[in-house]
Amino acid sequence: MSLNIQDLYKTYPNGVRALNGVSLNIPTGMFGLLGPNGAGKSTLMRTVATLQDPDRGSIRFRDIDVLKEKDAMRRVLGYLPQEFGFYPTLSAEETLDHFACLKGVANPRERKETVQGLLQQVNLYDVRRKRVGGFSGGMMQRLGIAVALVGRPQIVIVDEPTAGLDPTERNRFLNLLAGISEEVTVILSTHIVDDVRELCRQMAIIAQGQVIAEGEPEAVISQVAGRVYQKSVEKSELAEIEGRYQVISRRLVAGRPVVTIHSETEPGDDFKRIEADLEDAYFFHTGTPGKGA
Image (tube, rainbow, N blue to C red; front, side, top):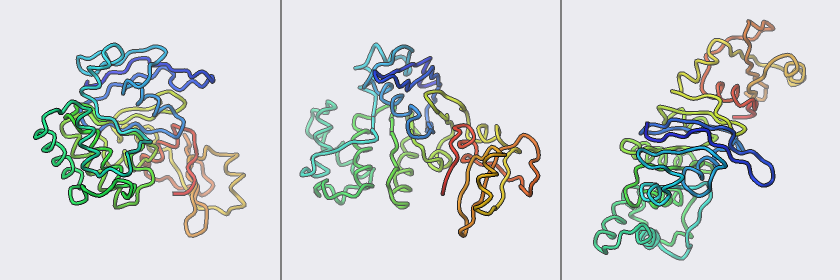
């Protein structure tokens, strides 16, 4: 395995236990880390990225002891955090040139070639001289991944990269990540099920600081397959159904609630068995009923 995480624990001074014995083996390629907000995803990503220490546990990336050899890890790491910013008055070209300098690309010619190549890769070359303060959210995300790719990293971590992007920018960004993952380890940390379903060959679900499911997406789905049922109900029936069944999601379809439940036995009551998908598995494992789309 490319990245090995063993028994990570982290409790913050306010008493919140963000990581509670997290262990994962992450191969080369795209790996999805799926979980609700507050599940511990960002804490785990910051720890792997050497930005904070766990209370205990170990992390190895190939031959690097990440917690003891932080500089070595940083030399092979590209990291796009959930929240980041750039100097708004600098152009995309100037911004990327600055980060290339910080990454140790000292030769001006090499740095220029690196900057131009990355801007083309993330489809920002035509706006390379535009100030980043005028960039859209999707353009900022693409510039962020360009910064993360400076220095040809062997592992790239992206934390909630598509939150807030419109469908066109989301697809463009996900396609960019898919292309990168052919050669390096890419960890996609997100609460958006579709991002993992569409891209990742391997995944894990994390909730309350613990890994509660992992493997190929189809294997995770198989854990609930044959036990997911659905029906359309009246709004007045919702409270009774939620009291009788394990509701894993509910949404409005043409103004009418559609309820999805998990049941080990045939529930009757006009519920119809449906083919489970990753969203059903996610809501079942996290215990957070999905509302809306």
